[in-house]
Length: 254
Image (cartoon, rainbow, N blue to C red):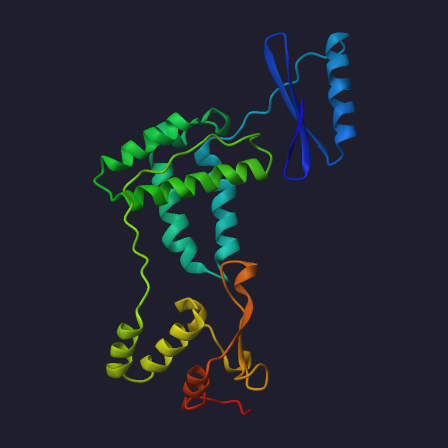
């Protein structure tokens, strides 16, 4: 049978009790079927034996040699906090647990996920911390699939009981805060409230990103973020415009 992963077709079939699975490196299903048929025929004729299966790297090797450099390069500029607070602690926790880190990528199963989670729980860690490590592990194996080192990723279940910290600030809380907040904190918080910017996005704003003429009250451009979708143009509300116009550090004119 053939199946598609991202843009490339793979084929797999059983031959003399062994599983044959290979990527065709093709995006055309007809060509993929022809390649599968040719492989079956060559095996039947005895022209070739079962092809040697490439030895997959261990999880520790894959993280240290490929995923960690990728994460550093990806988030170093746009979102360094993502690497420092999420990826790096996750990599360290995974690599420190030998029964998981020493396994080859294609040997890892859902049972190993569960075993790693139990190990982390015995260290008296919060459920949210354990789930964070599991999400990093899931991302690592997802990259292995994307980079054609794994055909499929084993299923993973996160732990239940994770404490959700997200909450919405009410209008009453907002008013009370702004009544006592001093500058420049009051202006910063006003921008955060009205635009929905992340804190790091707000702190990265420069006067060159402000347009006083676009939209009804002007716009601000977000040029850095976690992903391409983070780069966006947002309309300013009247009080955001007022806060920025009154800013003593303002260096650009309308």
